[in-house]
Image (tube, rainbow, N blue to C red; front, side, top):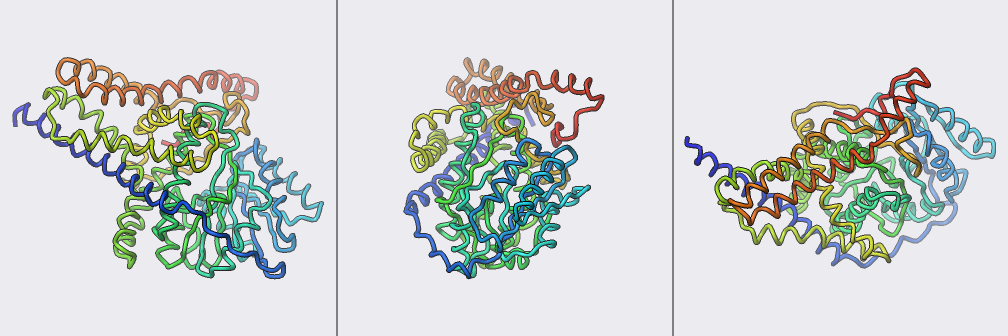
Amino acid sequence: MEWRDLLVILSWLYAIVNTLLALFSFNMLFLLILAVWQRRPRPPAPAPDEAQWPTVLVQLPIYNERYVVERLIDAAVALDYPSDRLIVQVLDDSTDDTTLLGQARAAYHRQRGRAVEYIHRTERSGYKAGALAAGQAAAPGEFIVVFDADFVPPPDFLRRMIPEFVADPRLGILQARWEHLNVTQSAVTRVIALLLDMHFAVEQVARSRTGMLMNFNGSAGVIRRACLADAGGWQHETLVEDLDLAYRAQLRGWRVDYRPDVTAPAELPASIQAFKLQQFRWSKGSIQVLRKLGWQVITSRRPLLHKIEGILHLSAYMPHPLILLSLLLSLPVVMLYGYTPLNWALLGAAALIPPLAVLWSQLRLRRDWLRRWSHYPLLFLVGIGLAVNNSIAMWQAATGRASAFMRTPKFSGGDQRKSAYALRVDWTTYVELGLAVYGLGTALLALQRAPALVPFILMYAAGFGVTAALSFWQSGGVRRAQLQRRERTGRKPTRANSRCS
């Protein structure tokens, strides 16, 4: 095979990769159309009589959350629900002073007559799924509510969610919409808020209103205990026990639904490194669930459209390795003076869809929609920059490589650089920097050989460069603070500070 023949093959691969990227965008357009069509709110179910309110178990899984554990327990205890039918259960796997803080706060509320149980495990078997299963076995409750450590549920949360289950005995899981406590903290929190708003205003609305397979987001949701048992309980083969459970429940015939009008605010990841850690877990977990349940989805009795959308849903992070391949393959295309069978009109149309979806979510959810939407360019660049992080996660999932459940650190709005939970830059940041340099070099070459490709290549270079720059900038001072802390305490940084690899 001659060198030029190899370049032609790579240019065809470049066209295939970018066409697949476009197809994922057009699927987002399909969901956006459904969300717009189904935009009218549904009337809530009537509230039952006081005597008919069922027993509810509120589970609070935590691991090393010294900054937010007291706030979480206070919010759970403040839920407006018959006190004789409400049990608050703190599931603590912590290895630091979080346990002392949490136990003291639980004792404070018990002295005032509230049912607050505290379970502290000295080992993290099964991680979050294991903690939830252990707590479920130790307490009654017809319904189970899960709130992660970063959430602050409003008092009327249960009063608005539980009637839906009373009205529909086949409703197994009901998800509420996430709101944001610290959206203005940094450019990163603004970007993450846009991404989550799009998920809840477009994807969740489209899937829930049309009966398609959808996910439970793992927090701020209610689960019927009978549904949990019928679906096989909490399982920890994947890093996303929530998505795993939701799909198993729906394949068993249970309905999973979404209430966009019921919200629970939560703390967004404060740094790009924390966001990458969260995305690593979600992207790896999604592929793990695809490997575990994909064939069951395909062979189920659900409509063909539901099956296709289910597989696309579980493959939602696939654009990240495609982005990585697109940049790497741009050099062979440039060497061929821009020759590629790619339909550029198709690619250009696909590029308009994500900003439209984000715009719709802001129009639906925010009064200051224009100011918030103005941060979309940064979201676009960070979305590109996450390709290294998420591609590694997906590769590990595809090859069956196991890894620990690394929780996203929370700081209650404080300076994360001075915290023991702070995250330093990891090796993927240097890969991102290298890809930015690769993109710049390819763009310079394209100026002479394929000028039409220059904007696309620079777009990728900017995405990886911005993401790497954010990592270096936000991690400034973290290593120095950790070394100073180590000198004072004589102890090494905890595993909470290390990244899942």
